[in-house]
Image 1 (cartoon, rainbow, N blue to C red):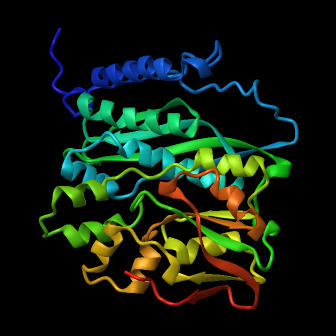
Image 2 (spheres, rainbow, N blue to C red):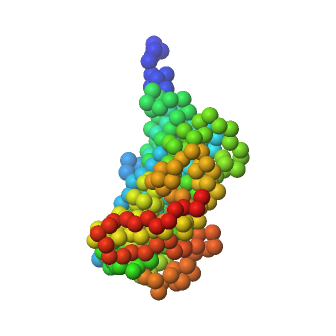
Length: 342
């Protein structure tokens, strides 16, 4: 038999490596999610599609909520610093933090990993981060896709995307309709940059040497707010909420407030972490900072004033919500008061 001159492997795609990675995910996820798996979904990984059994959840009068996202060019810094064990947490966070804005409890998660060439060591670190993110979110990794795409992605380049589905009772669904004048706006601190604004970050550090402290800050994983927020949802303590992602606090919070009301934010009350002050000193103006980064506010809650102490009781000191504004009657959509204290 003549040896073939052309093959998939010679073209840059190694199916054997991909199969090994799939088997690894299946074995690892079964160990981690053992208590959440049953006869219907315990062998999801490697199948054509994934199965999730919602039997333990009361689906009557409930809604399914879905979200999909990626981690943007934070991937480039993961590559630059060769740190891949937390980027998967970012991926899960970017999806589930959007779900909980509407009060939904994450049920399951799927990932999509596209890469130039399967590197098992690198891929295992990425998937461990994804599974860790699912554990924190109290959901299950039920499946996904790994695509080896030489030519589309350059050497060592990769991309991540995630998809999650959650469940919320109709009477617990959070929408802007519950927001009233005189409601208070609470800022829940971020863990850092989360996964937004990294094209600007990369431009800032392009020709700069940065120390270990800055590296750690830049790649600090996105805070997952699932456990805290869902406790508040169960107790009906939230009027509305906003995940502060791309567009910063300026563009995101008004998405969760009716157009007939005004969102008033006192910028001077924002507690700005070190990494944002460091970036601000790299010749970035206030407006650019506020519309690009979360500036220390990872999540916002719009609540009744009498509920503030009850809400704070569900957070530890590192992520304690604090007041930054209020809702009022006005034709103006957003009213920014004072300036950020950088």
